[in-house]
Amino acid sequence: MSLNKLVGVAAVGLALAGGFAGAAYWSGQKTEQWYKNALAEASKYSELEIAPIRYERGLFSSEAVTRYRLAVGSETIADGADLAFSTREHIYHGPLPLAGWGVADVPMGLAAAVVRQTFDPESNPWLRQLAALYGGQDPVVAVTQVGFDGASRTRLTMRPLTADNVGEWQSLKFSGLEGQTQLGPHGTSIRGDFTVNSLKAVTKAAPAGEAQAKGEVRFSLRDLKGAVNQRKGPFDLMLGDSRFSAGELRIQDTANDAPVLLTNLGADATIAPNPQNPQQVNIDTVFKAEKLVVESWNGTGTLRLAFHNLDGATLGQLQQWQQKIAKKPEDPQAINELVTLAKALLRGKPELLLDTEAKVTQGDWRGKLSLSFQDYGEPDAVTDLSTLLKILEKGSAEIVVSKGLADAMVARAGEQQLFDMLAAGFLRLEGDHYKATARFENGKLFVNDKEIPLDGGNGMNQ
Image: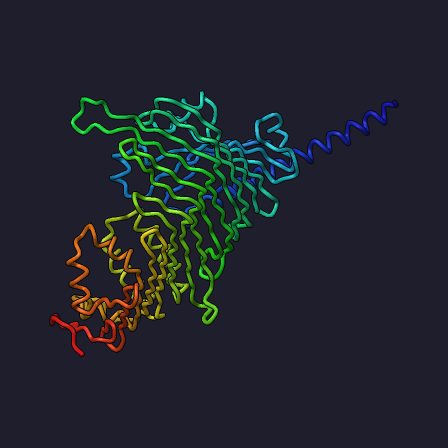
């Protein structure tokens, strides 16, 4: 090869190297800004105070330390070091994170950066103990690929653990945790899920010589899952769905023969704009258990709770108020600010809806509650029950419970309580079910179509 060709190849190589170094430097700048923006965005939706402690930017990689504190006031934090901890971030610059070559869990591929995040075991006594249980390995690892548009994809892993004689626990067996999240640019959306296959633990039994000796308690959890799919909407609110489920939860006390058993537990929550008014938000939640066994109770149950017609702008301000009060719990203006926000919510005439249903071996239960609220005037007008009732515009309630279940429920409290409710007209027996209805309208309360005085009088008026 001629000298000219060698010089040409060398020049091209130097140009490519220089270009790559320049791209890595630019990537490092962009990643540092992404890091700061990510912390600011996370602080909006968390009770944690999140702050960068150190950020050292190099040409091909950077290192950072981030501090997290539970925002419950400085005095409490000073008295409890376990309320604060730190993480370490190893940041490998793009467009190819070659500085992370050979590092565990760091993928090679086009990206603005790859961030490997772990706990700092020296930042918290509990984390130090956790690291010791894992033999010095990182118990939790989060690896984030940052896109050139600021979007990110994170994989979270917590390693399996089997340990004996850990504090109050005789044994622990944890299958590990796997999760992943995808964040849109500037936190505009979040999608993710996590899974824990199993967790088993046994507490230590108290010595027999102690006055309050107790046996061991066995705890097991199977098929724990969670998922979220939300997008930032109006008023800086995250709108969408979140889900949580557990295949089985079992708690067995050796002092009792029968365990507490819950199977196919589920919780779903949806936050969405009100179809009739885009300035308002609806929150709907559902809790259910396919099987519940507690002592002699064995059955299934569902609870639905909803808050409708919530003013979106006020909800956004409530989020800011919560963050403020968490950092300054003794702020003298906090209560006045909360009252002002509550009045703003009431002006939108919000609704609370509660629907419960249960079927057990003793019988069945159905209950419904609907409350519509309204602005009640000046804040200092709320002084007693009569003025509190001004908040309630209207409401209705209905309860239907089988006779067998009602008898079982009052057996422990005594049957006289049930007799008194029947005699007063609060309950009526129709066939094999007790029923009760109530409604509130125009400032009057009716139970089973009979008015109940709200002025402190006794009895029921026709």
